[in-house]
Figure: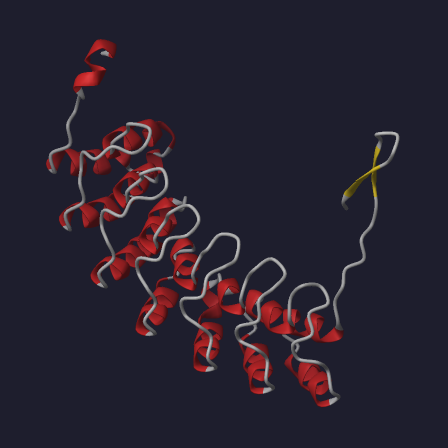
Length: 267
């Protein structure tokens, strides 16, 4: 319900008609038989009245059979939605791994970027902790050092994403895949945050240990003057389930400075 202004300065609610087609509805809900019938009856496979094609809808819903059917019917795997996403960028769930496979087999560009955030599919998969997706994309030559609008590489994106204790292992696996494939350990984003800074904000000891073992700079400062040790101490009180003490121990064991000279007057 969008707000519309009137000449008097008052605001009111108005309804906007959602633009869609039966093809979009069936694709988004996984109704493969209905989708096949519509295509046989001549439905335009790349029609996008609401800014997305049916292929976008099927990928967002992880409807693998619908994705396969649409692609075999000539759907454009590189179609750009109104908000700047290609179908590959909408594969954000673990169930969408076969959708990614189908898109790549039909010519989707593995390194295409979203128009607003400049994310690649590898950024998206890394941010959502999808290790299988990351592995598949790397197998298809996804670039490791592409930076998005925030200056993040896929490794930065994975380290920056907030996650619950039960998700720590899968984010570690993503970072492990990226690092083993040659991702830069000390790539800084727009705020000069390195992967280690970001991993410490999320209190993930496994990722911190991985980065430190590969040569992450333990005492490097971000734009705000904070080191990785500052970051973990700032979040420790409300991330107790993540066991932040393990991160602190790892940092100290790798030479983290406990008190910076500039902080002596405050201590």
